[in-house]
Length: 432
Ligand SMILES: *Cc1c(COP(=O)(O)O)cnc(C)c1O
Image (cartoon, rainbow, N blue to C red):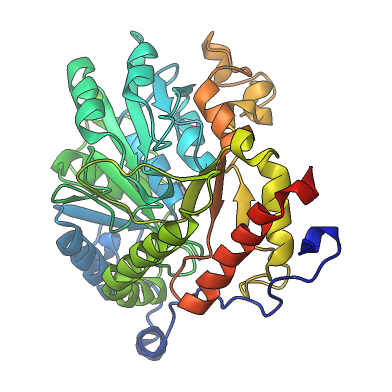
């Protein structure tokens, strides 16, 4: 059978359905707020509404209860949440923060806003989360925190990394943007470190258009996070903060979520358990069907972990296939239709993830704020090819991910995805 990439017939042309979790419930929630006329009642001054309005407060309480954590603090994005977390952790000029190179850029660059220096540790070859051994190797006298990422929906190595953090007195910030609903033993991802951050942007499991949530069980950190979210400098006096030490990083932002966004997020949270379960079931279905293809390997799920599958990661063996990952995946994509998410959306399969972050321009040139290279000019840390060999080999050769397992995909839709892989595998000599 001639492959579509060589001019043959496509296996399927009918587009895949969009991932859309918004329904009547969200519509009514938005109308409720709209009709009240109170789209946000936050005040950036000392007042009961310094902590937001009714929807903000209800959403935070519901989030904290769901995830079993003392404080949930809503913000306008996970990026903002990460910045708050780094500030509350007390990161200052020249402090080193160990970060993952294989993540969305915000989790690695957040330290820069406080003059902190991101130091990249390598990832584990089969879970893609930070490798505890590499973390340990990168600790210096200047290390203050570790930003772990539950990448693709799999929680980080909680036991090992938390033990390292304890031994060296480091704060663990957990970027759980891709893992709401994932678990390690009986605890939810996001609550496994000292501070956790979730995202509510359009691409995540649940969303409010934009938005984010920070969680912690620590009262002191919670207080600082709330202050940084909302003009800290204007209310610290009312908080009884007056010693210089209390004022560290207490210059605030406006990172507030609106009432409509929180009303939508409240409805979305109710849908989370089912959405995560559907992802797990869909991934299990596709994994089982792909077993017959020798050049594909499903990724490891750590023991005691419930994976939330933001995307479905798989590994490609070019030796078994006789062609490279990029050539093979390009041929699979040629067999399949786009997804109805946005007008120009491609087939939702990608080779690698984001390019290892230390290879991106701001690190390669050590230029972030101003023209003098601040804050990199405070440090001798270097960024170059070869820094994280596991991450590089995953990205450039072995790993691919797809999103054709999101709720909304029927069994027939997923069968077509699998058939495309099988068709390309069976006709791979056409690619040589
Ligand atoms: C999406 C994402 C973010 C950023 O989320 P925003 O809410 O868009 O700021 C941060 N980290 C990871 C791992 C993400 O996937």
